[in-house]
Image (cartoon, rainbow, N blue to C red; front, side, top):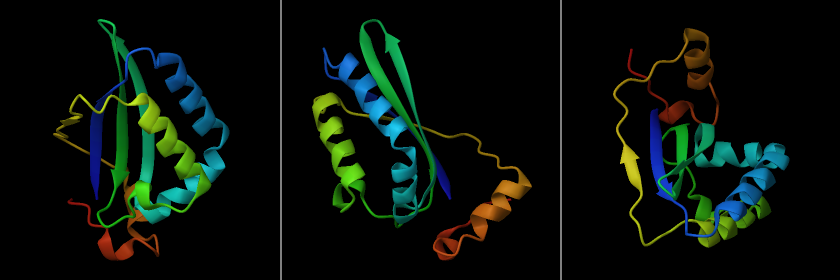
Length: 127
């Protein structure tokens, strides 16, 4: 089990499109949530930051290794997500992976995550 926080730069002029993208995902949360188990993702959050005219998205996940790559997903919602990604994310700038110094789960959450049938084999949370 690990947490990830990655900063992605938005292509210039695509700020409004990013908001359309996030609205689209928010409007289809039930479909999005159905894709997470195959990707071994428990939690996914996206944050927006506009700093010095260089807007960014921060992607936060709690996940395990071995999940399906979203780009290989057959799900229509993931195909739409990837289309928005390709349109909005500035691939000329390297994403920045932030380092988690501490991650803590409430015991009830930790237990629930550790007993998920399709992820049980790959879940390990250090005490």
